[in-house]
Amino acid sequence: MSAVSINIGDGVAEVVLSRPDALNAISTQLATELADTTDRLRSDPAARVVLLAAEGDRAFCVGADLKERNGMSDANLLAQRVVFRAAFGGVLGLPQPTVAAVHGFALGGGCELALSCDIVVADETAVLGLPEVSIGLVPGGGGTQLALRRLGPGRAADVVLTGRRIAAEEAMALGLVDRLVPAGSARAAAREVAAQIAKNSPVATRAAKRALRNGWSLDYAAAMDVEDAAWRTAATSADRREGIAAFNEKRPPVWPGR
Image 1 (cartoon, rainbow, N blue to C red):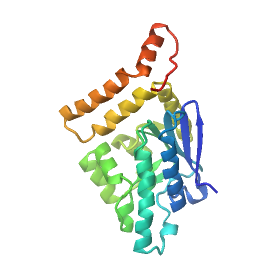
Image 2: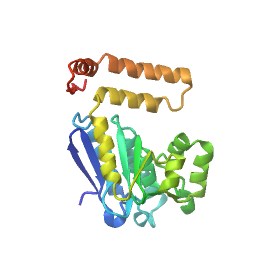
Image 3: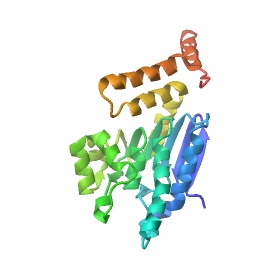
Image 4: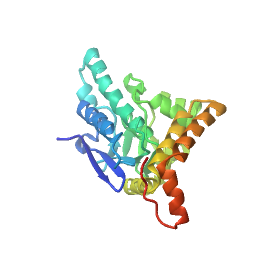
């Protein structure tokens, strides 16, 4: 049985973690399928936006499958690490804008998958956290670096070093979550965000994402060069010509995507 499903329509690729009986814990199979899925999506013109969601009522994802890891040798754990890095890196490295729909528990690797997305939409049932230090590990799916960039050093240290669970309202206040919606509506709300993005130029949204991501750790002058490169990509595209023509002709644009 597949651990990851995908549905593409109206420019949105909905990738769904599908191990609800295991609270969508990340097994080797799930990590492999997620890496393969993101690799395929990178070059799929039908996927203008990627939405990451999960089956079941209790959890978005509770992190690595510790039942599978129980008794693993160091060699086996290190071999699995390669697969996990491909999965987390696949989500983080998608050129399309990405939206996470979080409900219930999003812990450890589940929190990291959400933070790997550009926009995190969570409902009031969401509980986020990076509890790896409580079991003798360090967040390894980007958690330390993504928390640092979202929260700043002090708040990131609070989240990572305590390993505590963070309820939805506090997660929103801290910056772990970007939009907070009523219980049960995370996926629908995330679809609305994804649909709004999908209406825009795919060339421009990808270029804007590159500017946002690549400017993270640069000083202002260097970051402005990154922005200029993104602007030039969009400005010389067929999408820009179509966008201006559609505006002047008072009609919806039909994006060439190039």
